[in-house]
Image (tube, rainbow, N blue to C red; front, side, top):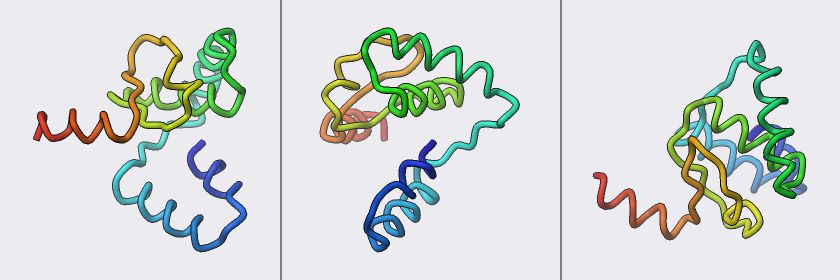
Length: 100
């Protein structure tokens, strides 16, 4: 899902920078064998009013067993889901400083 969203960016230099960052620091690949699980979970998340791409991205993160979903999107930040903590980048840095 990250690759799809990165490629959706109209600026080549931005796409390249984001891709390199995600590749080095934030990528977990979810097997396509888990697509049915992702579809079901994203459908449930969309019931909260979240848009499809955002719901799929969040579902992939949950299926990948990520601890955090970092975003600045207020709609996603207000979503209540189990199994993952949704935080903004500033809050994440504070949390990370306490962990490290």
